Length: 238
Length: 238
DNA sequence: CGCGATTTTGAAAGATCTCAACATCTGTGG
DNA sequence: CCACAGATGTTGAGATCTTTCAAAATCGCG
Image: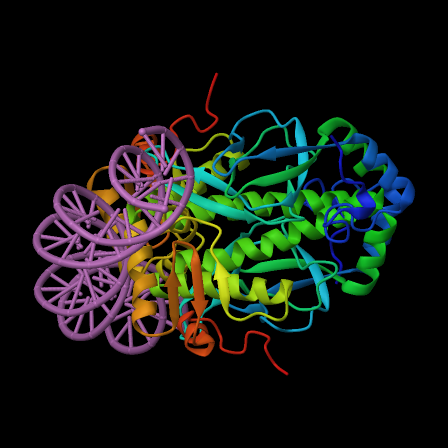
């Protein structure tokens, strides 16, 4: 069921195949298969042998690690065009879970690794994606290690806002959160109660409004930015 | 002052040049230069244009990020053979500071980038190093987000112990900490007082002994492992 | 030996978590 | 179309952990 041809793919220009020429694309086209997962479904378990690598075509997935006693921490959030799995790794290092409904474009690992050996375009793009993830992970480390609960929540909302703006310039400040309070807590290194309290504190102060379970509207973006604790000049110069 | 020839280099087999053949090595040999930094010296400042990339030949360096009000968090620890800087990036994303005395093997970024384009061996190794850093960053996220102060300290000591054992099999459990309490605190997302208290708590329990400022001896490795909060089977089978 | 830097220790404040009850949402079946 | 049930989210109060502020002790270098 390869409904979508690579040239029509929504992530054609950002995924691991971004730089591929027509020949390379044909080769990928022949080895790919789509697979859909429901929200909440586990895509890969930690320790499982790695049989496929994949690009996220649609939806949001998370990577998480768990301590002996069950405490868990998300260590990555995968959005469309992000890549799952590493050539050269035999096992999955963490649980990969579909946060929303997710569609993957999968490749069997053997032929994909061969492709990476053959085509610098793919290897290069894979490198860029890995470095982007590393940057994101490091920002996250600062958040996890040093930010207060309030700053964590503000940063999280700000991140959603920026992504929304980037994707679709005419934004009215309304956002949809792709996660439950519990998932947000696991993302931010908090408990779900604290997440709830901080959301409602920002609401009480008039920085945001909440409606339904997943709708947020940003009322005062400056106040929100201020609450993140980050340097104020986050690249927003004219 | 290129005292050391690549073939005699202590990190020859692990650094970015690990897979290079003789021709490639000659090319690197011609573009490299060594530079030494004192403990505490800043190697690169955040936001600085990236003019060199480098391998750590000797010593320990750290990457850190800082919040508006001065709170700082280390986001990486660089040991010999680790690589500083990314082809494709224009700026340094964080402060790089020499934790101990450090010797770098530096390459100017332009010719190095050209080399990466030309030689899959270097690109491939760079990719592996980046993925290793990503794994380390993710383990650190779990620590920062979910571990208690006690678990953080135990994990830190265990990490030192494992590195010591890996480097030098006949180990007697005596370790030298490469950092001050303050630096350890910045690494673990704690305050220096909490670091001190947790070290002394482990000492009081007979898990470790402390002598001088930087000497630790691990008395009860099992108890230490137990205190890390990690899965007990950390790859120590057979 | 003495001084500055680092580390330890104490006490109190503050933040987040835990446990528990209650409220609200969503979608399913009558 | 409504009512209901389970899942999700909110709120409260107290416990716990870590930080903060302050002072004293120790280390190691000159």
